Image 1 (cartoon, helix red, strand yellow):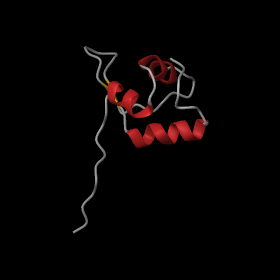
Image 2: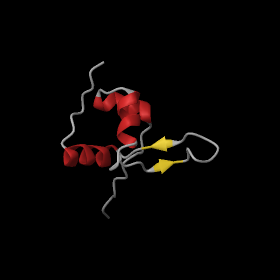
Image 3: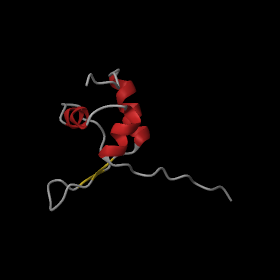
Image 4: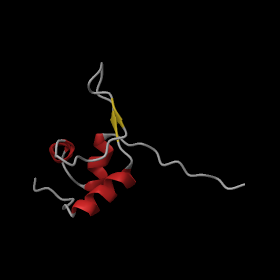
Length: 72
């Protein structure tokens, strides 16, 4: 039987660590006209649960040819 790998969702802090960028960069990318893909977003309700699939974010960055480094 083939086992299906389910990629875990990561939070903003983990995404920043993996990409080497600041939280401000992530927030800016989420607000673009073609925003960064978000898998879970409860910010309009009673909390701030935002999660990402790392592979989706990498694909998005590659499609947009954006740099994954932000000057600090």
